[in-house]
Image 1: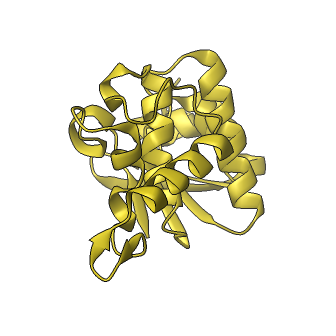
Image 2: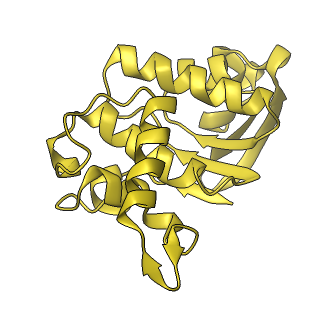
Length: 171
């Protein structure tokens, strides 16, 4: 299992560290030989994941803080996807990134789900949830109030469940 946290700057990255160091932080042991981290293996892994996720960066030795928010999010995704998880939790995966990168992240998550990766996404953006989810779980005041399949989830049904109301109570 892997978690892409909501706050990439505070919880997902070491901002002063390099792009390659952040991208490989979860894979230290596999990139080591006789207990010593191979900088060549670290660099190759970071570049491979950078290419896969279309990371736009100058030098991979630059601090991750020099990247745009969307590219920082791609580094966090690379860090966790490189561990080959069976379940990926993504918390607000597109918060604070531009529209183009948001679409790239959505495409990536859809592709991964199509390849069999189980993805649990938490998002406060209703259009994102409705566009991405196969199943929507709605909570109100810490309690599960609805479980909706893709074909029955729409703005109205989700909003009723999120406010703890039934359609007949709203009038």
